[in-house]
Length: 249
Image (cartoon, rainbow, N blue to C red; front, side):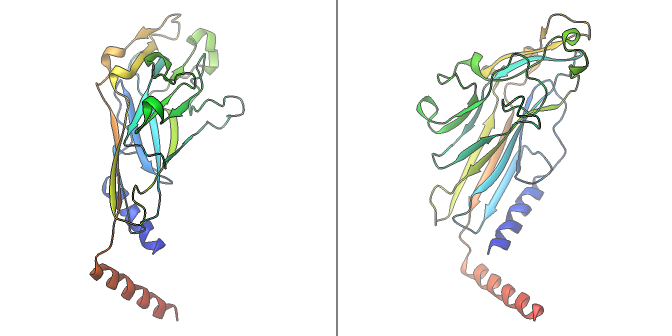
């Protein structure tokens, strides 16, 4: 049965696969089934195991499309339809011993660490923000920050389309042992973005806001389904197991 679960999950992933995030001046939220290589706008997880968990990775990409490189971006990220039984793991980059702040890139100048909120004002959703922002203030969100190109020197990162954050979520069946479906939407809406700015040139000493170039919303949708097989399907699965067993003999 576990082998069948894996095959169904991969089939759902393949049906929605397409290229890596596009280049726009925006925050681009993507997701993928844990262990896969391609980031998607829509992820479909389906399983016959009514007690299985969906292991999903969510990535937050940043595009500038103008200027020499990023300066600062501060925003809140929310995920709808969050259950108390779900779990979150924020991931640090390779040198996390030096920078244990939940970021994937080198954009950490003057920035705060990250935390997940899902109770109190955030009941029924997951919000990623600063650990000192339980009241959901727009200025206390997750952030990527970079010092001026001159001050940063060789450490200044000019890349575009950078993965700023990656976190893992484990989604559970809301009715274990029974069939169920869930849809979660991870979003960085424009009204939850406090700042978004770049440095015009490698000689810039001040930043320029490009907040006006952002889309109103950019989301990743996660569809999770726990399926009760029809009797005919169960019979076919059992027959398939017998055939496999005979071949092994």
